[in-house]
Length: 64
Picture 1 (cartoon, rainbow, N blue to C red):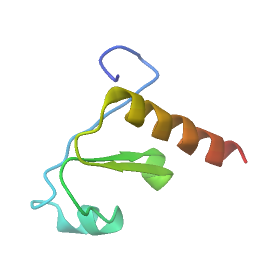
Picture 2: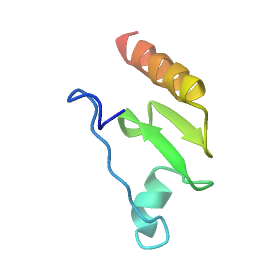
Picture 3: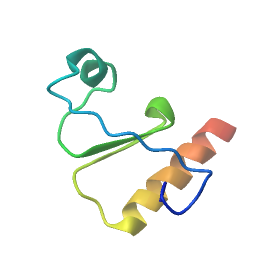
């Protein structure tokens, strides 16, 4: 998604090399996608539809 849209920013971090960051985001599995600093999370390789649904849910939670 980040490659397709300038509105999306993505970073990859090696959880074992950055334990403080991993702890802050409560990484419980790899891969883990953290949305908007924890407003949403997807653990594991998720289908695009599931990831999109979590992004929408996280954005709605921020608006509320």
